[in-house]
Amino acid sequence: MSAATRELLRGAGRAVRRSSIWWAVAIIAFVALNMAFWPSLEDSAALQSFDDLGAILDAFGAQNLASPAGYLDGQVFALMLPLLLSGMAIAQGSLLTAGDERAGRLELLHALPVSRRSIWLTRWSASTAALVLVAAATALAALLCLPLFSFEGVGTGRVLAATGACALLAVFHASVAYAASGAGASRGLAVGAAIAVLLAGYVLSYVLPIAQSLQGARDWSPWYWALGEQPVHDGISAPGLVVLAVATAVLVAVGTFAVDRRDIHSA
Image 1: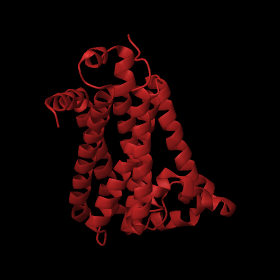
Image 2: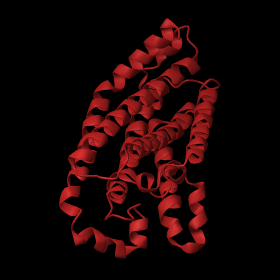
Image 3: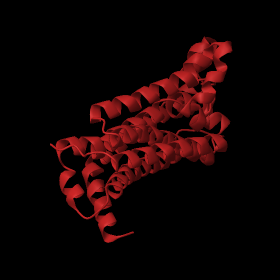
Image 4: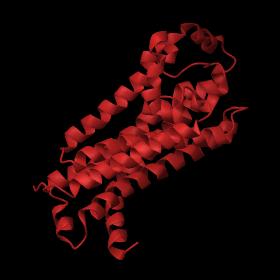
């Protein structure tokens, strides 16, 4: 890695450092708080009664709530953690690319003897690195909470794999915004495109399969590729992660190719 590339990475990392800390605090607090409720609920009939809701719970990935692994899926890993990590990744990634371009903060960088693709790839890499650090801190907090809040029988490997899958799904959604930004979209449009893909994937994975005739829809969802139906309870599918990683790489390539072949917006 050249000195210029390292400096570009450091500069982009500094731009999102403070917000990453706050995202980490909020996400870890959310995970720990939800896990802290388990000891008071595990012997309660309330969670078992939720199983009678059937399809309604399926729409939120919340089956088997009365089991420790099912509770973790329903409260954390099947819906809310992917949403929170995706929100962070989309916000920071679009800020460093389309946001900084429209604000004129990339003009000086583009005037340097460094290729556009290097500038944009380092900014994508910096936002992805920030996400990975937050996901790693979240996984560590979850692992520490397992024995603390009586999650017997939940393997550490399942929790690590589920957190990693949530992070990869977030990187995929951020890469949608990156591809749109690389093509010249404004930050608002790039964020909107990423959110549209996120919501469409959720509907395909959780909502449409409620109808028996539409269960095949989940096969087209990035959510399903990453998480399956219950990532902690059932485990993660390696082939699904490979498909998601390939799709992410394609989006990054598209965005990088596009920005190298268009005019750069100036403030």
